[in-house]
Amino acid sequence: MTIADQLTLLSSTKTAIKQAIEDKGITVGTVPFADYPTKIAAISGGGGSTPTTWVRPADWLPLPTVTETDQKFVGLHAVYPDANFVALSAAGDYTVDWGDGVVENFAANAVAQHEYNYDTYDVGGTTLCSRWYKQAVVTVTPQSGQSLTFLNLHQRHSALTVQYSSGFLDIALASASLTDLRIGVQAPESSAQIIRFADLERVNIVRSSVANFSYLFNICYSLQGVVSISTDVVSAVDMSYMFSGCNSLTSVPLFNTSAVTSMSYMFNSCNSLASVPLFNTTAVTNMSYMFNGCRSLTSVPLFNTSAVTSMSY
Image (cartoon, rainbow, N blue to C red):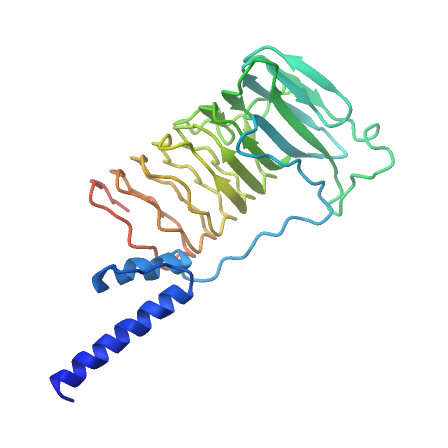
């Protein structure tokens, strides 16, 4: 084969690769051929095996719709035959509809507490599902003239002194004013837990201005469905340990990480994680232990590591 033939073959091969990439929904345009690996990585998120898609149980109660303009939290809560304690706090002044006919108002930062009685709630069993628990939908909204700036689901009911598991199964929330969100731990950048979120399977953060996601879903080991994690503009900066111990998680969607500086331990011990998207990592300096213990992950996209100073482990 002559040099001319080789060049012709190279050109036709490049064209074929470009078309194959664009057939997968990725725009190539006029980027240099050297950048094609990045485009290829974006097709499947760089994972090895195909992740299992989480399917919401058909007999779960539907959650109310939450939109980007809302200031609202909704959560599907299991009501078991035994203890059913739930507590939370929020700011500003807020209202909680517990989903069993009880609606209460609370001052900002006051702890809201409730207990469901399996025998007296939904006596007809209309919310009873195949997993043998009944269900209630909890709704938190700010009172008139207030904004939802803080939400803490990691509150222990005062009737208990031991660690127990929250009954939240599926949650969704939105508030452009929300800057502090706590689920898997008592406080960001701390691994301290007083309750566990062992039942939580799906989350949808439709809109927020949360900056610190550190440990947000720590040891949420049933979490499989991450619909969206939306942050206004470039608010998120710390995602260290964000999904640590989420060993049922197989994949996550692409969310705004353009201002994030730390992804250390972000997916630590996510044993089932099979793929990750091509996150914007231009500001990230720490990727240490980012995929530690991810035994199902066989490859990752070509992340921008120009600012990274630590990739240990």
